[in-house]
Amino acid sequence: MNAPGNEPVDIETAIPIPMAMLAELTHRCPLKCPYCSNPLELTRRSAELSAEEWVEVFRQAAALGVLHVHLSGGEPASRKDLGEITTGAVEAGLYTNLITSGVGLTEANFADLAARGLDHVQLSVQGVDAEAADRIGGFRGGFDTKMRVADWVAREGIPLTINAVMHRQNLDRLPETIELAVKLGARRLEVANTQYHGWADLNRAALMPTPEQAKRASEVVAETRERLKGTLVIDYVPPDHFAKYPKPCMGGWSRVGLCVKPEGKVLPCHAAETITTLEFQNVRDVPLEEIWKKGPAFTAYRGTHWMQEPCNSCERKTKDWGGCRCQAFAWTGDAAATDPVCTLSPEHARMRAAAETDSAAHADEFVYRTIGGADRARAKEPAS
Amino acid sequence: MTALADSDIPFLPRGVRLRHCDVRKAWFLLAPERAVKLDPVGAHVLQALDGERDFAAVVGHLAAQFDAPQDRIATDAGAFLTEMRNRRMVEVRS
Image 1: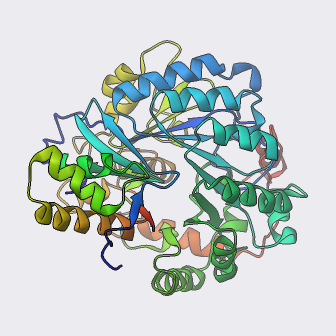
Image 2: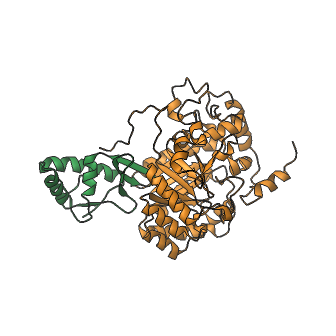
Image 3: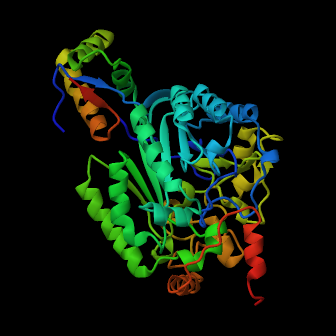
């Protein structure tokens, strides 16, 4: 009665219908998390799509078959027209999820978003107390604000997910992170180990967990899932550098979701711009449907036609889709290579050794995410 | 989770919505990070939840709609709603 749509289709000829769209409404954000998923070159406010343009994108997305929209950033509450944007998403028929740090929301404007039909809130927490969280987020007072926002979400009866990005400097406090999520009334908790692109890659030596931490975290998640069944659902993204096989990144390239950047550029995943060989189109110039179906960045790695060995003859090829294209490009210079997380990749040993070196680094200082921050950090590095 | 009593009122909580997808030509139940594709029976059962009908009235409504025996509807709809409750996509008040 409720099996998700898994009808057999020819993956080389059928163009899948997307389920979800990540809408990066802005790159403005009061926080400075050193693992931010935004690119090193942040989009400026003057280049952002207007609320009217976003509403048109939502209509096109719904017509394409998108069911969920994630209003994200940067911090989406940095936009004064977030209410209008939310209404546009709701009226397009999309299930509307706000991904927020909480900073910038007020009780009154949150009540307004709730009245406009917001369906779900994902609230990030950087740490389990003000001292730890505000140091990682680079914003004093952030933790206390989040605690208030969680209360407003609960009062509106909107389901709450807590997003916790984990790394070496907070992974040992995973049990307390889980307790915090329960205390805040969350029904879901995303325990997402850092993905090492962009800002996080710049901060690898300060963030990479140890193999022991990775192992312990998986045990804690397994124990807690059993203990909190019916209270809290935990979605777990393990630290993939210490895994055997890669994650099925994005559920497969251009199969399930897409991402629209603040200026309207459309990407198969939010980090895809790190693949400098790809060419991206903008919804200001090309209809979303055409980009999804025929765009060069979308067709490049859709399906399996692009795969090399060891992926091409691997029985897991349609399970993990060769892993993460961005990670493959970062490590090998070829985005069609096997994700080096995979133990079958010829690059695996090099990547694993680098991860172990990073995890043993006694360097806890961050390069914070700020406009121009990446350039300043690079300028300070000794020439090698 | 125990079976629904006749007087239980099943409903879709805030953050769970039914939506027809014209592209896929199917009904979906949408929840945080989840989209459950419904077959026509599942869609009719959830459409019958108006927040006021109790389970007995839901069964009566469906039996009349489909001209089907009450006990079979009660068994099928009850099993389906219990499964949705376990996934926290349907809630119940009494």
